Image 1 (cartoon, helix red, strand yellow):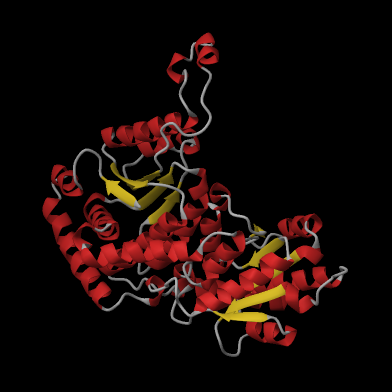
Image 2: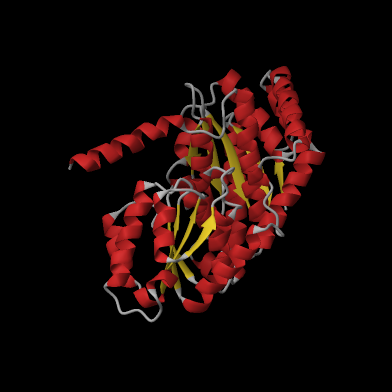
Length: 423
């Protein structure tokens, strides 16, 4: 599935070189004990999503309805209601998945919505609105706009068939709206927060509609959870959390860089950014997530990482790509003095670039962890999702903060409603 390394030596050796061996071991012991208890308590619901769970019936039926009747799906949601799905379905083209075209206007942008409406055929478009609370202003605004757009069009099917909803049970605006329409409503798990919901129906309904395997994602996550339970002291999440906390406490590391060498994982970095920031930025504590994608950001950000402040813990994600992709014509390469490219593939270049980036970062004294993912599969991405969620939860424990709340953002939501009312 995936493996990790800290270069030519172990994480312990790296921290020993920094004179932080004892500090790292103390954090690793604390993290391991927490992980052991966490697994013994059968994890939390975000990590217990299985391929035979009761929600699979609703996911299969709704995704089948969408794929059999529509060509396009608009997913209305913001933050955790959209970012996980975007990260998951990004691998669909690489798997040759045959599903509907999915659009995720997760930022409330009037120009984007106009462009989307001008481009799509309303008669062939389904809209799913996702909000755990059922009161998310951006999602409700988009929903009302989509309803007006469809009502102006000539439709073949009843308008209720064009909409579906995922929200918590109970009295809430989004659920009432869906009930009034008579549309399909799936229950958002009330014990899983939005940014931890990618493996629930929130993320897996778009996955199924895209033609990818929900079972694959969940089975991959279950495999990582099993390793986390059986070998906590060496699990990616535990070692990563211990390393992060040690560097934050003793080396002033204030930023966490996630840099995959795969364009398909660009959306994954956005998902991780929310997960990390909203879970850990509390009580004056936290490390700031930084997103980059290689090789392109070697030419836009790497100068800072190498020659700027040494305040980042770098995680480089790679996918073995030697011999992959188009091969460069040797005669053409030599003709223009590019002998080093002759007969090499694009994959060869990316592999060498990622290795060179890591080696250069380490030579500048930066702490670098490499995660090697053995392919763009549902199982591997499901495992990657759960590993980073577990790492976030373990890090929160080491920091002494609650990973699951977000009290500071509520004030902004309250003021938005106030200002709109005053217009």
